[in-house]
Image 1: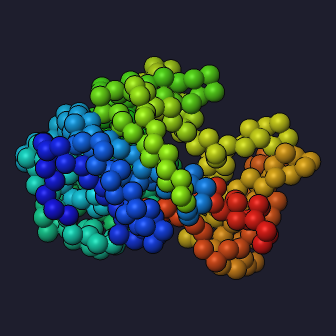
Image 2: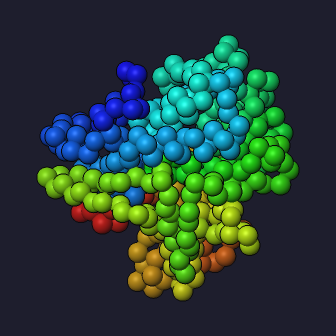
Image 3: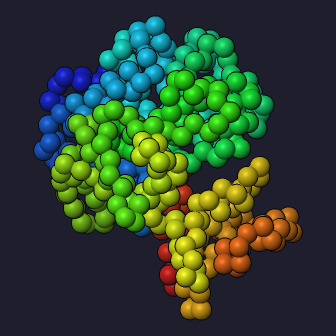
Length: 377
């Protein structure tokens, strides 16, 4: 990408080069829209709730808001011009764009050039450049742990966010020397909302992320998280087929996340997407937690969905890419013996491809719509 002028009124839209032809067409046809809001950066939402491939959601966030977030993150990790960032996340994702902003403010060197995730390439970039700071998503950390790769000595801090990190994976990475800071963030707040502290690096106790000073939050009675602060985005644009819906975010953003805090109210101990909780026989079932458990230590990923049921309201089913086999059936059977009766898996679906966002987040609504509500099933 060309050098970004953080001080200009120019607006930018960052589009994944691998975006579908339909999304690219949507962006081109609404070219005049993106420049209506000066000094704004537009990013496609990385969430998992897109109802179809004809839908795209865009977050408009001012350069000032992104820099405000970047400044507070730099302070949180005591980053200076002596640091060297590895940008292993793309600029069309807030995790990658925020690294550009942080290095711009601190004067830290930024190393890029990993076109596609690869453990060997990632480690080589760190060792060859003396990288001190990096960001990963949990699946990338899992790849490093699976390969039994120890952390290079120059690296002093690795942010891990963009999805849930299990305690088992954290402990395995810690034992390999990876200096993990667990983060919770969202595009709508310019990146990080909560992050564990430098003092907790290497902690045997799981370091739940702490609210950052520039963020204000409120938790409703149903545990929905609402955030506010100077790093808040200003606009949301939803494009769906021929429809264009422009929404102003206002002074606060009500997320789709259900959050549990520790007694102090300053640490996030659990996050669940609203669409990942279902009610079965009157009991709330956390599909995200179940999905983490059934996939622990497994190479073949299983997706869990709630299937409508007249008797139970809904019931859990498994979805895999490719054809099921005896090993998968045995895995599900054993899993069912370890959980509550209402949480048990009642069927296995095989699909050619599980729909995902550009950064690999499963599009659960689209998958459920195809399996349970389309004419072909």
